[in-house]
Length: 249
Ligand code: NAD
Picture (spheres, protein in one colour):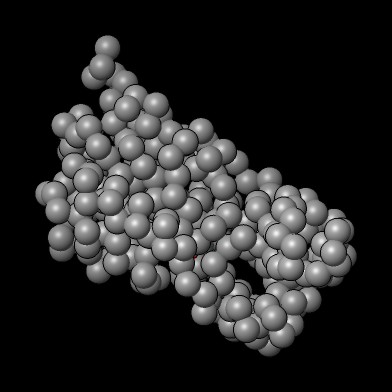
């Protein structure tokens, strides 16, 4: 592992335009379950409904009460704090090496860690809006509603600004993500099973030879990577960050 961290440090030190592509695995060390691990959301009890089904647009429209019950209990963690991985990425941005974080997460933790240029492909659970008049609401508004939150202006249903199954991703975000990956001199993929499309396809726009994958389990892109580290992302990124600081003294 020492050697992998050393290699990661060398790759980062030789790069000026790093893009990090992250998934639910970057936030498990903040106490937020991912989707596909054994303790992940897909293995949780959806009270008679499969979790993928609950998180779909048609389910939301048909059973908003059941959607919100599952969503508030299982998907949103208002008190979660950024971990060492989020913080290390924010520091790399501050130093000017990392240009963009593209995340599939909806937990706001990259922004909370201080990263400024974050593309949230699947939206942000801390942002909510009225489906009729578009009035914006924070996450506490969702929790203060007993069942289904409704707009205090027009009375319509309020929904999270997240991409549900059966919905399209924002084209503008996809465009920006593609360009940042294409222009990157290094891409670090962290904590994602790379099975959610079209997000996972974006990595294929990378044309360089410094693809790093930090993920506890195997991914479909491991064979294309210069470096694959199957360890906890928080620990790896903290050690890399420490090593980078030492070598800059
Ligand atoms: P996923 O559950 O499919 O994959 C997570 C991957 O991270 C797994 O391969 C797992 O082995 C790995 N992993 C878990 N903990 C890790 C750690 N500490 N260090 C390194 N690797 C670790 O998640 P995904 O690929 O992001 O796709 C699922 C979808 O889930 C995304 O679209 C996302 O919107 C949504 N999601 C988001 C959150 C969140 O916002 N935190 C949480 C759950 C699901």
